[in-house]
Length: 289
Picture 1 (cartoon, rainbow, N blue to C red):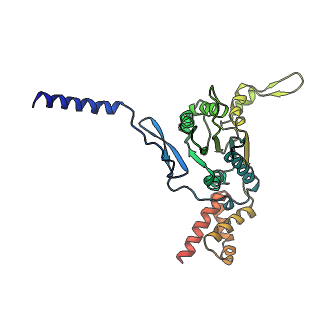
Picture 2 (cartoon, rainbow, N blue to C red):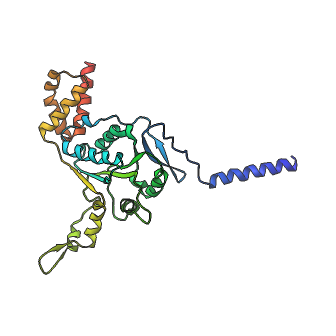
Picture 3 (cartoon, rainbow, N blue to C red):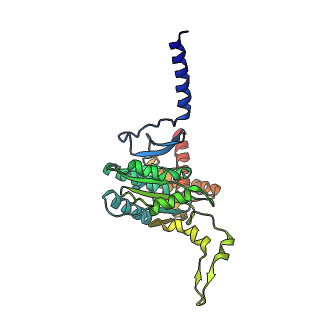
């Protein structure tokens, strides 16, 4: 082996070692491939991954949440049209359409430039990087955090507070944060928190620092939208809607009522999600019979 061959071999080994040390390259987002993205990590570096098969749910598919739908749709319309709009926290009973409503708004306004970026709770510390990546884009972006809640001391809690309130840099006007949670205040509440309340001489009750900290994040969302468990008739109405959309006749829908109620009883919930799951099971069995 010549000296040149030995040099090239050593250089190749050195480059191989450097490749293992240097951060992995991440793909640049292709904004023409879709209108929904997920924030992903590779080798410690974050990047946007296009969602090629995004949910196709429409606003008209969401039943018995008319008031909540009107609030979210109006806020999103203002945002898409470049008008003032608020970050949104959707809270309440599971399976009542919180995340589906956000996805439906994306489908409603995607042709007007709305885009959605889904971010896991574990990656909320990357929010400044995400905002920097999209701040100069012409589209309007909703950063979507689903099923959000925190335990004491989690890093993402403070990162989200900063993103909602702004730090030394101004908030980008083409970004809003929409989050869903089963908790109104996002942090667990304990009986011991009551001990931090203080009484003033005039009888007023004032929360202590612990309570103030736990409600401070929720208060940074400009719009709170609450969802509630469905009544039986509401649940059956949703079942009927989905069965009809899956090709069932009116007679078949009527015949399914008893099974739908038993299905909900087994799951301990009369939610929209449970209604949709029942409809898929029932319609599928009918199609096979």
